[in-house]
Length: 340
Image 1 (spheres, one colour):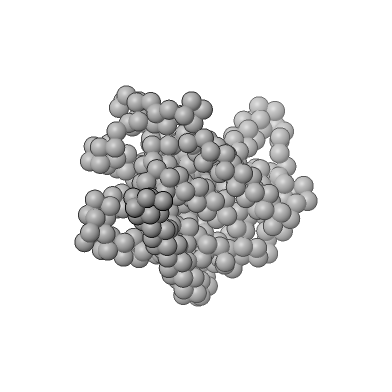
Image 2 (tube, one colour; image 1 turned 135 degrees about the vertical axis):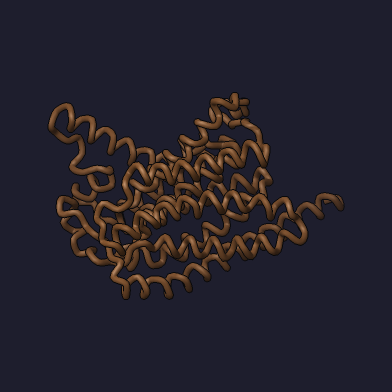
């Protein structure tokens, strides 16, 4: 091996060690934050409100602390602030580029937090009005998209997985397309959240795949945010697996949806989500099919939508659904990484 080859290998190993450290530190912060936040949520009686027409097995979850997405948000803010300070000394470009990724993640989470706060703390069962919620999500989506295009100048190139090429979209098409990706992804992840550990497990795998892609492409800021999110989600998952001690609420599901879409757009690979996020897409389509079919015929296609509830009412245990959906997502992640 020549000197340059040895240098590249040492640099790669050094970077990997640092990335692993970020995951571990983020994981520890998330676990500690969980141990602090969960008792507070219990004390404030910020508990899950179960539907009477939902699976009967869910009624025993009534009162389980919700709004646990705060734990992930706290971890992201703390670790991102640490990384910003560290990189602002040596690589100011990397430090600056961390901010929009953190903004879109926490920004969507903040909209979810307002919705959760109204429902669970103020006891307004309707929560944030759908129109206001959409306006909040739209503001974050537009701000992030315009920042990418106008300030970071990343261009409108979009990777097409099938032909393995980038195409330049006209700006008038790219901006609404990017906004749609952000809003659609957050909605899809939100619908996936309905069984202990399901949304957290599936999205952690998706985020890991996007982080691997960012490492391959050398997009350091996405790698840093991805590692932070992986650790934060794994720490939260310890308390979110069945039987869950805490649920993420809209605070967490919208936050994770924003993180996934933001990372994909920054990598110029939003279409890779068609493969990576197939489970959340199926969850969304199942709801749309159920609603449309019921309106037209008065009958239902599924026993209950989203589709994870259909499997639950068909006799599948929650752990089985989470395992199967996670394995499918893992396989899809391998496929996605191989088509870049």
